[in-house]
Amino acid sequence: MMPFVNLTAQREAYREELETAERAVLDSGCYIGGPEVKALEAELADFCNSGSPDAGKKGFFDGKGGETRAITCASGTDALTIALIALGLKPGDEVIVPDFTFIAPAECVAFLGGIPRFADIDSETLLIDPESVRALIGPKTRGIIGVDLFGQVADFNELWEIAVANDLWLLEDAAQAFGAKYDIGVPPYSDIITSRACTLATISITSFYPSKPLGCYGDGGAMFTSDAQLAEKVRMLTNHGSKERYLHETVGLNSRLDALQAAILRVKLRHLEDELKVRRENARKYDEFFAEYSARASAGAGISGASAGAKIVPQYIEHGCTSTYAQYTVLADDRETFIKKLDKAGIPHCIHYPMPLHEQPCFRGLAQGSENRNAIMASQKAVSLPVCAFTDVDFIINKLRSVL
Ligand SMILES: Cc1ncc(COP(=O)(O)O)c(C=O)c1O
Image 1 (cartoon, protein in one colour):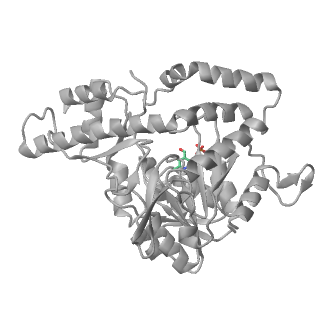
Image 2 (cartoon, rainbow, N blue to C red):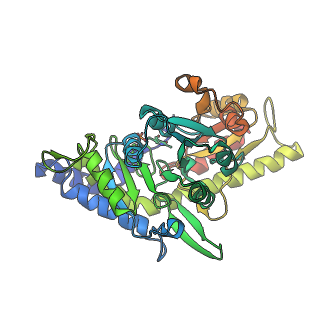
Image 3 (cartoon, rainbow, N blue to C red):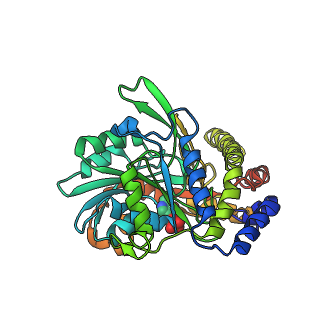
């Protein structure tokens, strides 16, 4: 069976560069922090600030401006936790999160004693629905976490308006979207600026989990902000609340990126734009196939098997968004039959995510979210297909043709 994400093929493609970088770190005697981590942080920030002359300057939203800075840490989950601490989350504070995503954003809020409030998603983009966010704002609301789900940036134009109008902070969870692009509409929306994921909120975070579009060979993560004071706070929190050795200004964590992971990420970052191009081309091929399938299904011709012609619709990518396609996800009306067909054809698949967060046992006491019809619908229909730059999507589509 082919892998869902082909990390061994990726390693083979960059073997020489990777082994040189890995050996240099192992021979250096410097394994935590140091020059590799520093260089990676500078390169991550440069990447985020590139793309258009004003990319990265989220000041268009909040009036503060400034270049985005990057601070690495030990995982995407740690990045969320540290960002929430830096933003001043206190027990009992409410934070609005999407109901349909990986657990981490809601989990980190709850872990710090906050209360996650679950917003519904848009039925087509599968991203947090600003209208649902508005409806959840109350006196205890402190912030909103927008998740760039499957690599598509959430509706930050709207989320910023809501945050500014209600004096809330905004956190961008770009764990799946490092490298995505997004058109910022600058009020009065006559001027459009193409910006990058990780530059769109008070603080943004990403994950370098191995299967992410930019992944290392273990756990890793990073935080991004254009606010210099916040950046300093975040950096201290990653290192026991300390700027100066054995002087602890605040209580912090040990959440640092290893030099070895930094060196690996620096190699992979050099190839990221090319890989993202291939991911987008793979997604385009799937889009074309599913459009053709839909046309055949509505004509009732050439469709095989039980529940023939049941609707299968890809996640809708909004105009102005360039997804990283961390996942290529479709909504299948008859998921059970679709999955049986994928299994028959030997096509790997995953369910991201099998239940809305409000139904998770750990959140049941919160008694909110059962009204989120789209999150419930997506958890019943979502299926992800292999899309990474080392996947032979033509081969998969040929197999799909034989079973759909
Ligand atoms: C949306 C989202 N947020 C946060 C995380 C957590 O990242 P990590 O696994 O690096 O802790 C993930 C990981 O899958 C994710 O998908």
